[in-house]
Length: 434
Ligand SMILES: [Ca+2]
Image (cartoon, rainbow, N blue to C red; front, top):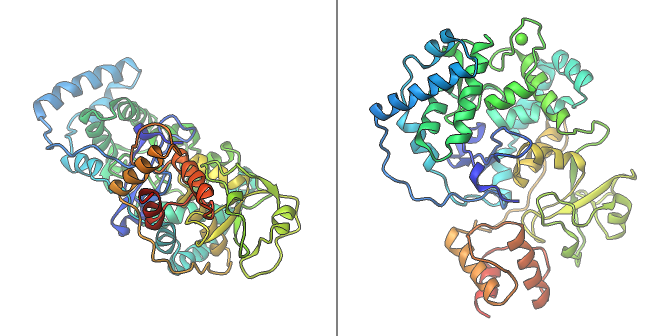
């Protein structure tokens, strides 16, 4: 499922990677700008050319008048409007960052090796202990296990170390004024004003990513208003300093999305030689072939160490994020719940793997891979080849979405290749040389 118009990049804990891209989906149940590190097979590329950034202060002042009038009409107090918007100026850097998105940057293993490091897992383990009391209360009340709350925290802001230092009001005003996604950001600007009006945080402390994601859990203002909870009872929802509020709000969010605390998210597995790659799910929901674990066992799937899969009656899909030669995972319902929060396969797997390691699980050794991420030109060449051979309908858009992956699978089946739906350079060569 591709929702290009909602693509929202933001700064992330993984900003150290240089090319962190956060893909958000406007209109998805989770209004939060979700996170990916690098492009995943599900993150649409941003293809618009970068025009010269001109932010006319005269035009901005005129535009801001309209915002102020509408804010007043929406019932936001004049004092809040003056305090928040009185001296706000557009931030050219925000527009620059908004337009500066890598198209494709990482393969799955590359992403995972950077997202789930031994250090991040160890820090998560320490955080699990340090915040044990708050986490236990949160888990009891919202039914989301502590290790997952810590994993989200670790991936989003490196355990609160990287929450962003942009004025949220100024960043949102800039993005709304810039106009590429005015409706989204103008709405979030009014949400941010509503938060200020509620005295949850003073304007000077309302800091976040350049795209307006706030605090330890990088909530967009709409998510803050929808899922934020005051757990320490001081009358304010504080996503910046109150750990009870921070964990409680995230748990409330995940609970609302349908978290099932009786199950985990899935697990890394080993598939046998000759495994039918056509059994793997290619769509984002990972629900093309859903079988009980006992059936996967019959297909020869084992734990990563070769031991038998759990003998529980769990419905699972199998995913091969980097094709049949890459790592394999069985995934359960909570994996799909993570995807409702952030529609990136890479992100969802990394949350699960990190959560397990935070709780003391074995590190996941991913096989070294010489795969390179495909660039946009290669993706288009692949699609054009698939279209000309009638494996794919429509027009080449350079986005490796579910339709393209299904087309790759049809091509592979027709050529007697393992139908894993995975496109690498050798696949492109096979498609374009025929
Ligand atoms: Ca509070």
